[in-house]
Image (cartoon, rainbow, N blue to C red; front, top):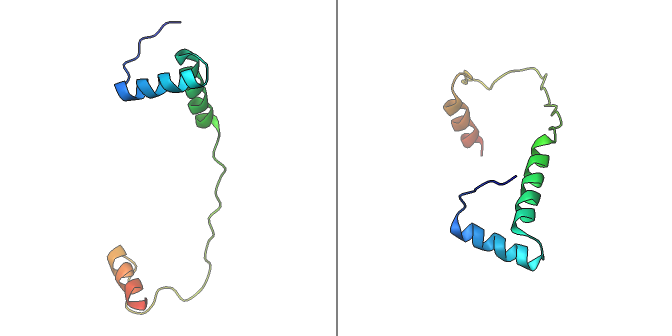
Amino acid sequence: MKTTLDLNDALLTQAKTLAAQQRTSLTRLIEEGLELRLRAQQVPAKPVRLPVYRGKGGLAAGLTGLSNKALLDAADEDA
């Protein structure tokens, strides 16, 4: 199937050079790149299990936990 692409001139020059170095066609180089990109999209991400803290005690005295700024400021004070 024929398709027209509007490519950046520098990118096209690099692609032509690489195709010549690898003794392949520009079409084949573009096909390989698309195959790699599409294959990477199809790999499902593994589910991530996040740890859950079940400790007691809560926040330090004076912190409400309602403000990220207050929590960050308190963390900076401990450093």
